[in-house]
Amino acid sequence: MRSVVPLLALMSISVTSAEVSYQQGAPPNQAVKRFAFTHVSVIPMTRDVILEDQTVLVVHGRISALGPSTSVVLPPGTQVLNAKGQFLIPGLSDMHAHLRRSPGNRPEDYLAQGITVARNMQGDPSHLEFRDQVRAGHIPGPIVVTAGPAIAGRRISRRHEVPESKDAARKPVRDHASAGYDYIKVYSLLSREMYDAILDEAGQVSTPCRLMMPSCRNSQAEPREPACGIARRSGGRATTSRPRSPGMLGIRLT
Image 1 (cartoon, rainbow, N blue to C red):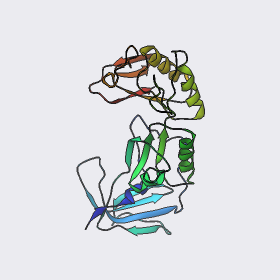
Image 2 (tube, rainbow, N blue to C red):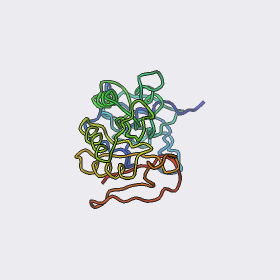
Image 3 (cartoon, helix red, strand yellow):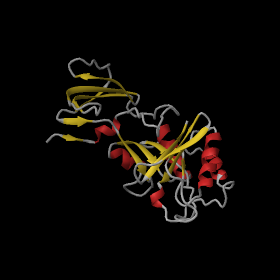
Image 4 (tube, rainbow, N blue to C red):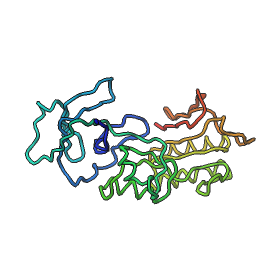
């Protein structure tokens, strides 16, 4: 039986979404510097097609060649994996992950399922360690993009940080950026003034930040209602737009 196997976890991918830009360091070290999948069926996900009998050459963790097996020339010393009867697809991205050290939630578990990018939705210093160890090639795992503790108007989780005023809401933004988190997660039950202060502060820190917040329909608190819509910083100004549907909405600062 032909199947899609965890070979996909070994493929390097280009993520074009606003959430991830893997330009922060060198590719992870690879135990095998050069290897190739031969006679594999590739599903490129860019169009409705299966490319049969392909060879994919990976050098230092990056795809350097992809084409018909009859035409791709492999350099001497390449480790060859005959994947005839199997499929290769681009790595998957989990945009709402909760990485832990428990079985099933470890970085290596994500990679084994073909997930090559994981956006961790609430983090602590251990997640910075996961991210940096994967990036350095010390442990197997996906590219990790992580927030710090969520900023919320009420302590719904023990990890949440709860500012008491719009001025106090600026401090965790600075702290998270200084610690090296990739984006800021904003949760429910904050006033509009607090959201605006968080957005303004995030726009001033040198580390790019992305914010996540629930839509208005997720809050029942008065008067501490969350801001409605998606906020964007453009040309030094923050703007908002109404959401089309409830759920998690992203804020990108550019």
